[in-house]
Image (cartoon, rainbow, N blue to C red; front, side, top):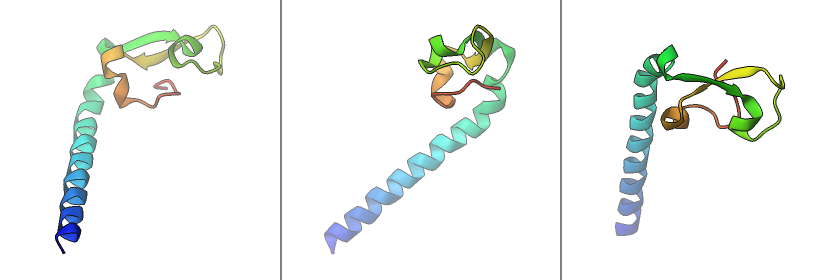
Length: 76
């Protein structure tokens, strides 16, 4: 019985942390999309993947905020 209760508590804490992270991103997303936090770089040098438009600068979040964006795509 104690193992089940421990599992439920761990799941609830994990779920709350997940929802808290989503809440932070939802609140911060309109702020970090301002031009102050956006850099223009060539896609392949930033993501490491082949660029859809080689040589054309694409929009990415600044390095400290890049955890809020998908790892393989620009902002547009």
